[in-house]
Length: 207
Image 1 (cartoon, rainbow, N blue to C red):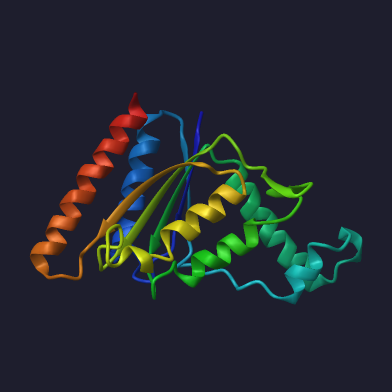
Image 2: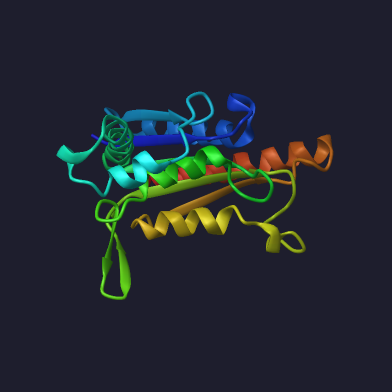
C-alpha cells in the first residue's frame, strides 16, 4: 500500500491551474496503485495560521512546560509533519504570487521544517530527515518563467525546491503551467503542454 499526499495552495481554489494539475496528477498516481491512500491538504480552503510566538517557543519547550496555546500550536505542527512523513509520494501545487509561492504554502513549510524532527544539524552541515519520497512540484505562472528574460524573477521554483531538499526531499519532478497571461491561444497552448507533461510523468511512474 502507498500513501499520496496532495498539498494545494492556489487562492483561486479548484479554478487555479496549479491546483487543477496537481489534483489530477495526485489522483491518477493514486489510481495507478490499488489500495493507495490519497490525503488532501487544501491550504486555500483551510489556511494555516502563520507561525507565532506560541509555536516558536512551544516547540523548543518540554511538553509538560508548554502553555495551552503552545501545546495547541505544536500539536498542529506535529500533525502536519506526521501527515508528510506518512506519505510515499508528495504532490505540491503552487501558484506564483508576486514572483513567489502563496503565503499559505510558506506557512505550511514553516510548520513542517522543524529542527530535530525533519532536519538536523550535523557539524557544519544539515541533514534532511524525510528521505525516500517522490515529490511532484506543480507550479503555475502567467509568464514564461522557465526562460529568459523572466527566469531571473522566478523566486518560486528554486525556493520551493530548496525547502524540500533541506528536509531530505530531493527526488523532485517539476511540472510547469506557464505563459497563460499572453492571451487565450497562449493559455490553451500552455495547458496543452502541461497536459502532455502530466501524461509523461504518469507513464514514467507506471514503469
